[in-house]
Every structure is written in C-alpha cells, then in structure tokens.
Image 1: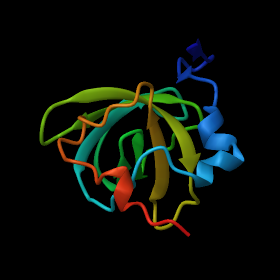
Image 2: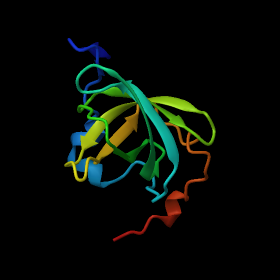
Image 3: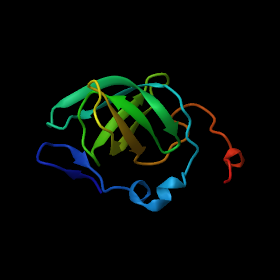
Image 4: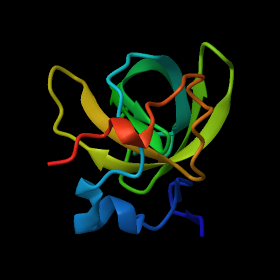
Length: 130
C-alpha cells in the first residue's frame, strides 16, 4: 500500500525480501552492467527531481544505482530505461553512504519485470552452488 508523507513523497512498506535473512539467496541473477537510466520523483525535501544516471548492478527485481539526489528508504521513485524508454515505479530499499556527492541506491521494482532491462538473464542452472 502506498503512503504519502507530509512532503508528498510516496512510500511503500519494506519488502520482506529486502530485510530478511533470505536476502542472501537472490530471487534473480545479478549482473554487473552500466545501463543509462533517468530517475525521477521527489527528493528527500519533497521537491521534484529528475536525474540521469546509470546502474551498477541489475536483476529482474531492480537495480543498484549511483545517485546525487537525496532519497529516503521506502520512497517510491520512477525509473526510465533510456535505451528502451520503458518506465517502472520502484521502491528505494538501500542507501549507501555518500562519497564525493554520490550514494549507491538500491531500488526494487514494485512488480518484478525481467524485460525492463531488455536483456536475457542467465538461467538458474548457471548459479554456482556452494
């Protein structure tokens, strides 16, 4: 369920996948790829923002981005894949420490979408067993 804050920022409850010990067992394969994206929404001060950036890691459920705009956990932001013009709403599930004005920001699609990145993900059989 979405929730608006006093600054007009939409929030969603944290996914059990993002906070549980099962997070170590990934739901989809992670790929280290830099894909240009446009993220947009309201910043931590409630002001509209649009930031062109790129992914560091992608999977069928979201991505790890590098961002200069301050955002908050559980905040809903929009993301556009610049290469395909596809757009999806995502929830912020991780914010790393800031360094040189940038933070690593983990986002999770509100609905999983392996087609958003326009790539083929490796089959489950490629996952290495320990």
